[in-house]
Image 1: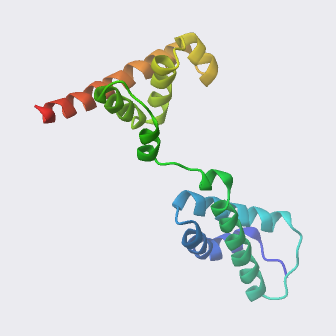
Image 2: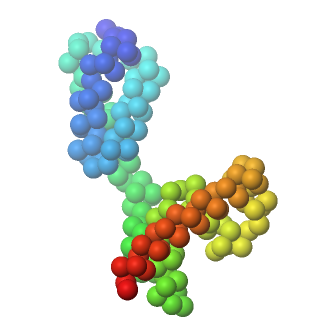
Length: 160
């Protein structure tokens, strides 16, 4: 017995997600586990005796994949922004607040700002690194600065 992949996805996607989320405690990782489980089913030519056997196999694969994610190097060595901030040394309190605010920007602005101001890359070097145009780098820097200005302005107004 070998049900079609679409049939299994329709029937067991939510169950596998729940199992994976229970192990991973993270929505994105659980989604990855579900996808990887169905990819493994598609890749293997395994025949199953019954529908219960298929379901049990899918759940077992999902659990094993979720456990692998939990034991991965990345997961074990992940550090929160707050913990990372504690390891950094800043000259002033304002420098620390600025860095923390930069780290909270959306990724595309944060990376451009970090490379430009903290790593001292030029806009053309950043364009090469990110594989985007120089004008796009300039736009990201400009928008990132605007977001920083708004955020810091709000914080400074609360301090007064």
